[in-house]
Length: 429
Image 1 (cartoon, helix red, strand yellow):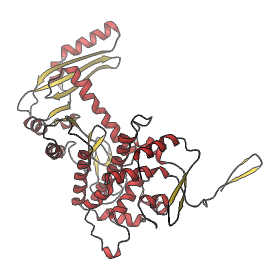
Image 2 (spheres, rainbow, N blue to C red):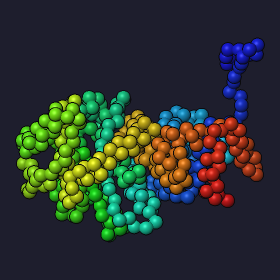
Image 3 (cartoon, helix red, strand yellow):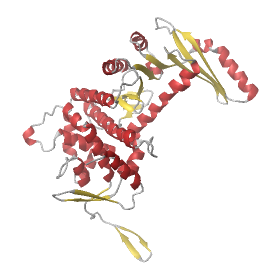
Image 4 (cartoon, rainbow, N blue to C red):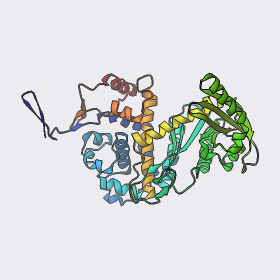
């Protein structure tokens, strides 16, 4: 390849540099994985039905190869036809030979069963529980669905009127920055479908681990369903659930809406009021407390509602408790934009569920790195993509012989000090 001249000198390039990697920093995730035993535990969740006498790549190696590649930004299986020869990836997976090809990985993904995905989903919760050294006093479970647009003829593909496309409708559960569930669903269902069942399963396991923990269910208005709210009340679960406005509620808050409008017109300052009232929807057996935020500004009136069984005052409940739910949107963005969980291009639904779980576990590794080794640094709150660009994408010459594997990182790597500090903290011997 030829580029424009540099002065009188020709500038050329070729792919003959030898064993050079652009992902030398992924060795950090290898150490995190060894610390957690994550991919090893994942492999134990899967029933390997392949004829073992013909198996060249173990389930653990295949899972590790996929999880590390997803963390590095390689969501396409075809990328592995080149990556399999990368000595740095081979070193991460403890092999001295080529890794699996895209065809082998594809066959493995399509071998996965529903029971395998259930076992992996349970492991995701167990990893969350193991992340605590002492029992937490309070846990807030954020539920939120999103859409994965489909471009092929995937199994269970349906058109969704709200998203105006063919898509899946996965449901995610987070507690802070930690992921507890990544549950793929077809889109021909009601938004909160399976949410109640998933909540019951999570509550059962978390209370088994920590009987005295206070659990709080937080989500948008799609989950303001009678059976979910009633179950939370019967099982001593605090909840903060969005609620849609209607004519009855607007009539109840007519004075507050009018007051906010008058104050805005008199002062030309944005108005924001908080109030609470008892409200009983037609399908509810009893009235429940509803917190309202009444706003008026140059856009007009804005009314936001939250139904809750908590006793705090209205403003505290809305601003200090419910509004923090918005952070989960950022977590889902990391799944979709940074790690490409929406790359559900396999034909079968179960294979796509497996892909979503692989991304979730890649996130677990990166989040563990962030939580344990990046606190107090500029990357303490960085998203997965930023961590990848700052720490994983390091150019390095890789030398491998019978005695050692040596990474010669770029002398001009910008984040040398931070990377060195992290490795020292890991105390790898």
